Image 1: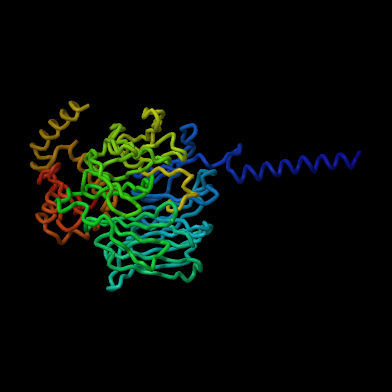
Image 2 (image 1 turned 90 degrees about the horizontal axis):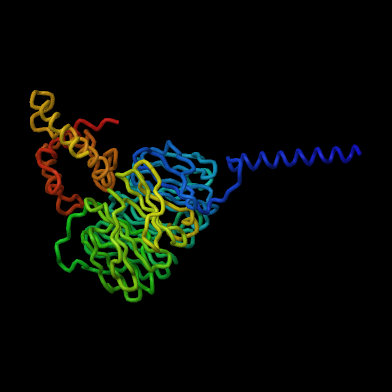
Length: 398
Length: 109
């Protein structure tokens, strides 16, 4: 009798402790996963919104992230934490379940983006000022490595196009010097660098293919791109799509294109052309131009639906009220949509049934059904820019 | 909405002519548009606090030694050989000059 009483009490206590622990861990009364969450940057307010993409609902708005113009995000492999790279050099680790900042460091004066290592233990940040890459412990945000971007000629460069690559490596390019570097962080405190010089003038952004096989830097200072076969780096960087403008005078560029989220389908890749109202179709077997598709304005993002049947394109100022949908098999524009003034970013849901579109000047994010091309939801957000879904946690280069 | 802006513009212009603003300053609503353009669109390369990005910083200390005419020229015509595009398609020289003054004074927080 007595024994049973004690046992019951212990059991109840244990339940209580477990519940308290869970509540403390999740910060909410009920349990939930993070696989359908997104982080949306509110660029003017220095805030990020945590959004439930299943129910089109804002769960939390987390303030205090500094200058979030041009901020970007990577996720921890457990999809609990978002690492937000701010323009002012801030690196902020946001707890998506608790809806608050877990840690924050200001690691440079001026930054452009970052990446998380293959093993999830390291966060690398690309800096403009002072130019270089700094690497941090993903748990503590303590600095583990500093890689100043001092080029072969002794000058310091802004760093752009930083991505993760298999083998716990990071790849990035030097804007001013025209170089691409691979940093191998197998031993985080002693990074090994492999440098490729003379890749072309003013590389402005870079991407790595989803399989980690190819790194491509887009060039602003000349017509063309520089490509590195990561499986055969000794072959060096190779110029592709050289002179794609074919001597035409390029148009002035009112917003730099972004090379993230390129479309690869049937061995073809889609890239925004710099200073032209075109997207380029590249044959990845030969790395030659397969086609070019005329579009409404200068493309900023050309992103592929996960099944790669559609590519959605947004445009530079002043034509940035429009989004076009390309049917990839026929290479035809099948829709021209007007989400509103200043469309800045687009993000597909992981299986592609929806696309989320941020409309800065109208303070909203519009969600479209990608099959019907109809609006299915609108979320009020303050000057939204980048939209980042947690499924990125498991993709190379995102 | 537009007519309200126009009305405000007329009123502000009238105020301007009696000495509140300089005669060649843009009208009030246009000033707001110009500052928005500066922070949001110029800011995409120069940083929304104008402390620089892919483009150079445009803070008072960076611009103080540079003649207004050269800065207006860079805005209106762009700078060939750099990513700086010409903005003459949507800014007049007077509007560019007003923005140069604002940048030299420093934007308020």
